[in-house]
Amino acid sequence: MLESKVEYAVTRYAKYKGCQHFKFVSPGNKFVPDRIITYKGNVLFVEFKATGKLPSKGQVKVISKMRQNGTNVVVIDSVAGGKEVIDKFILLPTAEQILKLFK
Image (cartoon, rainbow, N blue to C red):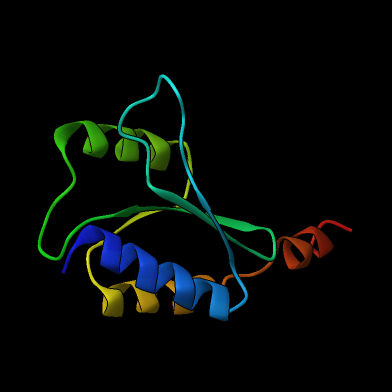
C-alpha cells in the first residue's frame, strides 16, 4: 500500500479515537518523522512508509537520536499496524495522571 494511503487511514483512525495529528515539517532538518500525534498530553512522532518499505539511513539516524532523547517515535507501514499503535498509545497514562503522582 502507498505511504500516502497508510498515512491517511491511520491519521483518520487517530482522529476517530480522539487524538490530534499534525503534519511535521522542520525547515532545514531533513529526515524528520511525517506526523506528530497527541493524546491527553502524550506525544508520538510517526514516520509512515509504504507497506514493506524501511526508513532511509538519514531517517534511521534521526529516529535513533530522538529515541535516545526519550522521544516516542514509531515507524508505521500498514493500516493494521498503525491502528494497533494508536490503540496502545491512547492507553498510556495521561500527562494529568502523571502530574498527580507528584502532588
